[in-house]
Length: 324
Image (cartoon, rainbow, N blue to C red):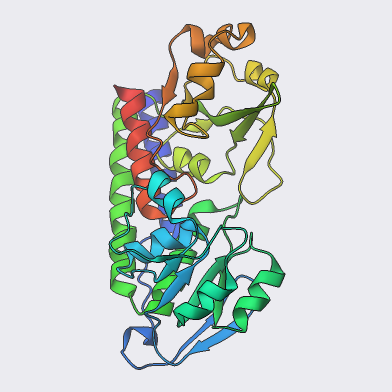
């Protein structure tokens, strides 16, 4: 009886969390009417007005690229096309946009030649670069994370882009699809009796013989999705950055306990730290989750910092890994 009550309370809490995020609220606005002017306020408080919903859009970061593709908008230019194509299979490009350079240093000459209606950037881009782009076209700066409400921020960004491009109906569909996948994954976790299970997400890399572990805490985007589908974070580390990530060392793994360990390789399967470089590490081999075969490598084409499409695939992948 107590178990039934506990599961019922958890399901209710999850439902309330989903409704609190407003993930299925329509992004309706005058921008949906062709020819209407669109007024937007971005994450920096900067206010821009477009004469009409934007159609020629450039994105300097992959998260808005995914959202634009989800909304049916084909960006005319993006940063690091090769990288996006490699890491994000949730929202594949339908056309061949121009490559505007790296995500940290976009080419202003290339952007100017493309004559965009709108440039979408995130707060990770330097303010100097944003000011240069504002001399070319209106710039919408998005907050690329919020460790206090990652899902809410993800949906807010989608709605802003929908308003800017007049694609509210497609935003509503994307949110409904996300909610449906989360509900399906949450049910699979509950059916397997795993609701409330602690899990640890991480990735890692090695430089100059020094191994670094990136912990995806409960404040990370994937950590937030874990909670939506009924899981909890095994990490006790507190993130200071909006990404919800904390860089630590191998010894931090010893404090996780016997929990499922989830990871997507930092540099893909060709450079899998945990499968290739840690196999002879005595400390790694002593971990309870390694001994008990609880290490789960997820599909590395799921962009862990993406939008609803990526996060829907992530929820599905976690549920499948834990219930297989």
